[in-house]
Amino acid sequence: MTNEILASLEYIEKEKGISKEVILSALKSALLSACRKTFQDYENYDIDIDPATGKIKILKEGKEVFHPDFGRIAAQTAKQVIIQKIREAERESIFEEFSHKEGDIISGAVHTVDKKAITVDLGKTEAILPLREQYSKDRYRQGDSIRAYVTEVKMTNRGPEIILSRSHPNLVKKLFELEVPEIHDGIVEVKAIAREAGSRTKIAVLSRDDKVDCVGSCVGMRGQRVKNIVRELGGEKIDIVRYSDDTEAYIRNSLSPAEIAEIKLNSAEKQANVMVADDQLSLAIGKKGQNVRLASKLTGWKLDVRSQSQRIPLSDLEGVGEKTEEMLRAAGIQSIKDILKSSPEELAKIDGIGPKTAEKIFAAAHKAILGPKGGILPVIPAVQPEESPAEPESPAPESEEKGK
Image 1 (cartoon, rainbow, N blue to C red):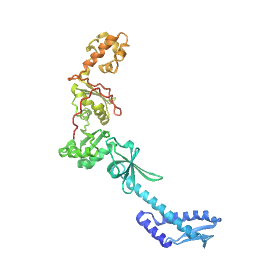
Image 2: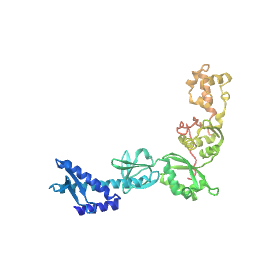
Image 3: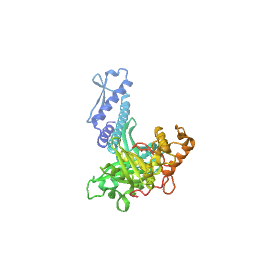
Image 4: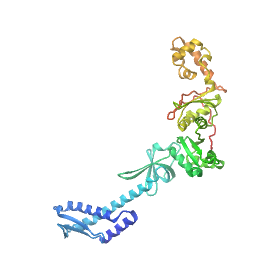
């Protein structure tokens, strides 16, 4: 048994990085615990382990004694302690290795797939990709290769727990760092990312070198760099936005591909009133309000996007005279947008406005914002960085994103 213990101690010390002294101390404590369970007068017993030879002695009142059961007890206890210490060492080693990868991308193979999570085999251990960190376009089967962003590494009673994400915005950032040498080298900086996983991402970049075009670097020759990232993300659209310290220019860039006619900034409230041509409104808003929503998240500004036809004063609407305008404003109706947010029935409840007049005003408001092709242009409230706008009534198809 002595030779086996010495061999085990040397293996643990060399391969697992646990010192012999730590193992011997744990073994002695375990043997003392075993003595307490075995001998009635356990208070008089002690254990001595020779670190050089691994020989174990049982002492009673300082003198070595022999007990018929001690050899079996010592062997079992030594085995249990050594196995436990090996497990602890492996857990610590895995935790130490993967804790340094938190905030980075790792690759693995799909081990199991269920409704709550995907288990990923990383070789030495497994990681969890929870349902909340997945997105709808991802489809994985057992054995598939997978790359994901490490959001958290923590030690639990069962060992290290590694949480992965495929929906985190920093996954896109790290993919750009891997794909674009200028970002990896610090020549091009990623300033901000706004992402709706599986659908669309806007990424703002800035060049630290006047000779290097930040957008061109990210797009790559014939768009190859950004295409590789789009492919990794299952076809997710990516807008590469040129960052600017000039807020107005930055907002214009962020609302691409729409062309902006005018921007009025309210710095105190970080709100921007954005005016676009009628045929650009659907592009600026995007499908289900996505373009303006992501632009708002990217810039950190509340964006109120309107078409130029929506600047029409209330008094220009058919059926709205000076007195009617006063009644509308007194009731909180300040713009065409406010009219369209109401209904003829609600307008008819305003003092001085009857059902017929309400119908006439409501129809005039719709007519005033008809697009050049006869489609009703959407009207949405100001979009804040963390909220979603109302869905446009009839959005036009989005243009091709940059880098596609």
